[in-house]
Image (cartoon, rainbow, N blue to C red):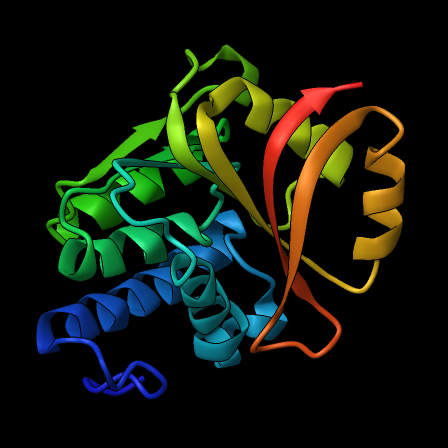
Length: 206
């Protein structure tokens, strides 16, 4: 990735430099603690960075807190934090990751990139005190029915969940409707024609 990160032409030089440094840290740490699949290391930009950046585009106006569940290597949470540092400086970003090694990685990246808007919780999602967040996100973490339980715990009353989902999203929606009531908007993914971002609000148990 170059200093002018291809695909992020509309961001500042500082944000571009942060994204480039983040990608370098991912490539350095991933072989040791398996942050991303080895097969995706050569396509980090589109497979992970751009895929995460499109989630940030749906940030509600005046949002104050974003909580990312099961952050792993930082998708979409760290990308959200990097973009928010420039575009939404009032936004606080929580990264919840129970794997201690991955949590160390997330803290290291936040420190090295000077991201003062990031808090890392190295605990299980259900053990973190409710965050009252405007946005909850999760990528490749769990089926939708399980994610809705976590979102219900950590969202503010009028908050939304943003869940990138792949080709099985319709089946996951049907399964979730057996236990949950919610409003959903399917937003086509810009990086995968078979994928969507599920924008969900009004979550309540049936």
